[in-house]
Length: 315
Image 1 (cartoon, helix red, strand yellow):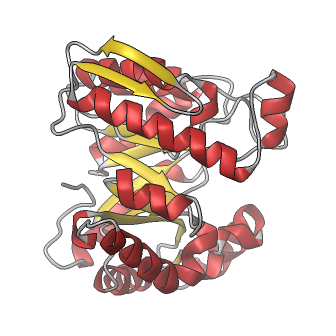
Image 2 (tube, one colour; image 1 turned 180 degrees about the vertical axis):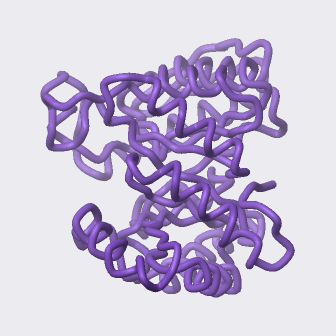
Image 3 (cartoon, helix red, strand yellow; image 1 turned 30 degrees about the horizontal axis):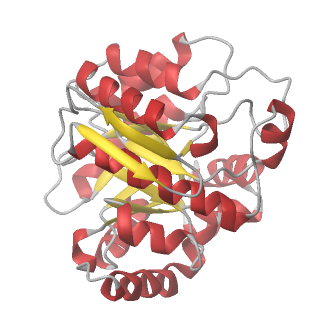
């Protein structure tokens, strides 16, 4: 399995994020993930840095760490512009971009900014067309497309991305009507958000069926999931760590009971179970204040307990 950390950039300065990214790189984590919102959801006045600019800065300040957003909001950037941005950042970083894209999740930030929102079907339609355009731009020097939402006439994308056949495309979500068909058609990696973990087996079966319906081998699709990581050095420290995790991640959407809360041996055992269930990667949600210490402890005490692993890094 491959391990990454999800640390939303809810900060007023860049330095703390850079420290976290460099710790992730030094301790062998494969990737670091940001969120793509105009502000922290529900906290429009709280300090927060923009995702794409932050990702660019982190990639230029590291050498092996892969960086992306789970996930970029399709409505914030025209797909041609986003395709050019992604291609350029993949080149600038030497092929370390992780490309996640979604249909948008917070109505309020769209309406306040005057951005198109629409019903789920409309947003899924825009996302599907954007993915068609961007995957073509990754693969070809020229792209032409005519859809209900976007029209592109012989757009050039030269030079192409460093990663071949393309930067990995991550699509997250659980909706069987709109999301899973897009995952089956376009994604390299399907990410199950925390709220989908309790239903992971049924959802995985639905995705397999959708892949088979369109003629794709389900084995060609990597599977990851987001989950809370709250790591205690030993049994004595565990009650305090559990209490802190409950305060920060107690909402039902975080599915804390399905996450990784425990001592190194407990976390290693659960990771082994998830690997046996077919998961290729985990994106750990950690509090920014605990991120560095958690990654250090994971690298020292959890990763060596996993079969064939000396560190948490990846591919």
